[in-house]
Each structure stands twice: as structure tokens, then as C-alpha cells.
Length: 346
Ligand SMILES: Cc1ncc(C[n+]2csc(CCOP(=O)(O)OP(=O)(O)O)c2C)c(N)n1
Ligand SMILES: [Mg+2]
Image (tube, rainbow, N blue to C red; front, side, top):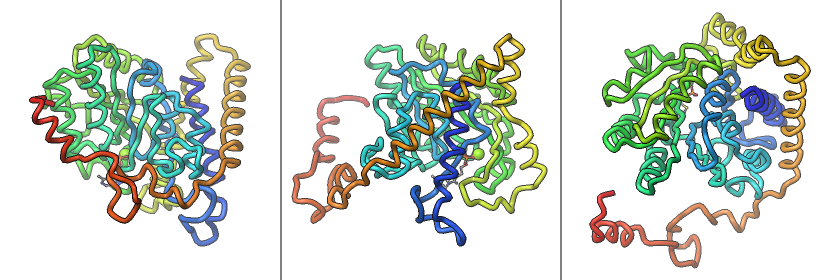
């Protein structure tokens, strides 16, 4: 967990530097080597590390627009992820997805900029595992600002009625962009949403990686043993703005300071020392992590950019007429009818 957490923190520190290149003095979001928005997860690493340490390669994870810490903890290829963020051809999605749309089938990982969007695909992965009689599980990460989305409720419901091996993990960082959580939900403890679906719901009130890991172990074990889905909420802290360039004028200074004062990485380091891990060991884990991150960033920056002729490739299942001369890859209408004709209920 410590390795994943220090890797994620340093990775994002390096991305910040790269991101700011060329964007000043007037903040130009499209300039520089990383164009577009960048949402960083500093202060949220414990949630990803504590959950993902119980996952295997054949398990599926979906994440939202703040995905790097989760992707790293799930074992997404660091070089190809970085190339994607830099919009390079060898990136996970050929450089066409960017930082919010990382897709790595080898690591069983996907994320999306549409909030709560990861819930239905995670339920789909759980349904597939269940139908194939496999013991893999799926985990959907989402922010506390997404727990009133219809897709979230529908996913919880389907997972519950079909007893699917899915764990929903809410990262509660108190904010949805500039919206404090008490203004969007009367339920302060998001894990209570589980009650309406008769599934277990647990809240970990701090970003203590060990406590997260214990709660996640239970929920993931339940899913793997075919005892149905669970909902887990973890209190985390948003150390940064919503995205890079966010002046956070809406956020009380005391709240920003409180987030800066709590550091789940230092907390875990203290716990490891208490359990007898030497400082030198922790330092060497940090150094190795920094080396891997620096190497991935240097590699990514050397990668070619996608060629303009390939701009439409992999973008449309059915290219709009005139975009390419090719026949559509598949006909959604026929596919849907075939499903009905075969009498399948899914
Ligand atoms: C369906 C949808 N509605 C609105 C947005 C715009 N949006 C992007 S992030 C965000 C807030 C998300 O807050 P939360 O889920 O708490 O995640 P956090 O940013 O705190 O990690 C919103 C409303 C979106 N991406 N998708
Ligand atoms: Mg939030």
C-alpha cells in the first residue's frame, strides 16, 4: 500500500510540473504538453491502495475523472498511461482518451469523465463473472458528489437483485467541484444508501489505509465468495483544487489547511515504523517509486503523436456517413434484434 501511495503522489507531483508548462501567464488550458483538464487525487491515495491490494489481475475496476491513484493501485501500465495523458500514439487509447479516459483491458481498468459512469460497467463485469461462474469481482470507485446519480442507484439495485460480485467505493472528499456535500444530500454517511438495497454498507471515517484495507477485505471477500455486493465509503481529503488551475475561492481556508495537515501517506509511514519497518526501507520504496515515475514520464514524452489521418480510427463503432469509406464495424440494430430473438434475458 505504501508503495502504491507514494508512487501515486509523486506521479501527480510530476504531472503537475509538466501540466503547467506553457499554460501561463494567462491560464491557457489547451497549451502545453498535457492539454485539457487535469484532476489530481493527492490526499485520496489510501482509498485506492486499501481497496486494490485485495484485487487480482482478472478483477475489474472502474474509476471516475480523478483516476491516477486507482489506476496505479490496480497495476495499470505506468508508461502507457503516461503516454495517454500526454496524448501520444502508444498511450493506452492511442492518445485519444486523455487523463480521464484511460482504458487498460490487461489490467482490468477503465475510467470516465462522466460521473457515476463506472457503476453500470462494473455491474456488467460482475454479471459476466457470475454467468461464467468465475470468482473474479468488480469494483466501481466514485466520488460522494455522484451518489445521487440515477446510474448509481440503478447499478446498486441490479447488483443487489442479481447478487453480483460488485463493490461500490465512494471516495468522500467533501466536495463536488465547488459544492459542499451537505448541499446535495441530507445523508452525511453515503454508505447508508446501501440500506435501500438491503446490502451491507460501511463507512471508514478516516483515510487510514489499514482501516480501509480491513473494510475492503471483508467487502471484496464477500463478493468473491458469491455473497453479493457491498457499498463502502471512505473519508478522504482533497489536498488540491478540483482541477489544476482551480483558485478554490469557494473553499474556506480552514478546510484547505485541514486537508493539508492530514497526510495519509505519513500516517501509514508512522504505522509501518511502529510495526518495525526501518526508515531506510521506506526511503528505498520511495526512491524506487520516484525512479519508475521519472522513467515513465521521460519515455512518454519521447513517444510519437498520433497522425491526423488516424483521427477517426477507434472513435466510432458506426462512423457517421462520409467520415470513412469503410463499412460500419457492426450494426447495432441487428445485434439488438439477435439478442431478443435468442430469448436471452440479459
Ligand atoms: C454526469 C455528469 N454531470 C456533471 C459532470 C461535471 N462534473 C465533473 S466532476 C463533478 C463533481 C464530482 O464530484 P465528486 O463525485 O465528489 O468527485 P470529486 O471531484 O470530488 O473527486 C461534476 C459535477 C460530469 N462530469 N458528469
Ligand atoms: Mg467529491
